[in-house]
Image 1 (cartoon, rainbow, N blue to C red):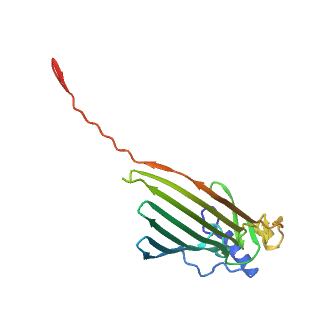
Image 2 (image 1 turned 180 degrees about the horizontal axis):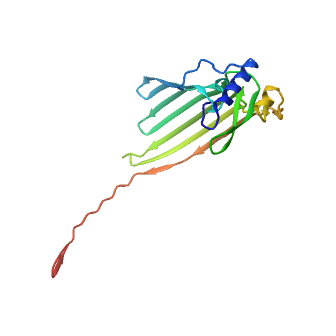
Image 3 (image 1 turned 60 degrees about the horizontal axis):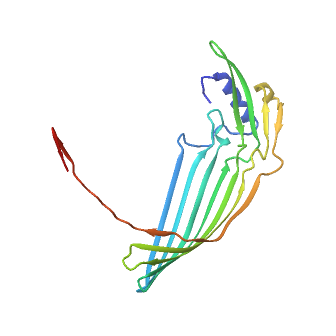
Length: 259
């Protein structure tokens, strides 16, 4: 707010006007931004018998950022915080039949949630300030009130199922796989912006007189939902392992060559 593009009397007057509207010019926020990231993983393997192994795995992850979306020429209460979390559970059953057939049954389900919340649930406000500098004239837009881009949220869920049967040749050089695959996911999100509206003022005089030049607001929310499904499909890859090597030497001297 103390940018060289804005004279000190102008931003002091701006502070005085917004305080008269009951808005605070400070929120007790630190000058730094905190970003946290955490994750965990748990795995259990159980040997049910000589030919069957069950593996269970769980994972969890999350991030946080506070504050976020605070502009250089914006009051602190125009920002917010952002959180995300997710995790999944996987189960794998591996079976070996007679040393020739290997079957792997796998299932994995996961979820992911993200949301951004504003510090103040208020309409956003913008005011243009003209400042006469030493050798130029500057027009700066100051922002106060709420955040036009918040709140927002999204939620995603997915499920993957697969079953793969492999046949090994006697010497293990060849393998034929036959597999089934199913994948499905669903998402819900609310990306609505400017849901409480934005007031625009052409000058500090208009702001003090509560005389906006325009007011815009989104009337239809942008809530989206969708589902993606890949039905059971068959996979039949054939893998061959072939090894071949050849080496030779060739020397050449003045007047004769030999291999």
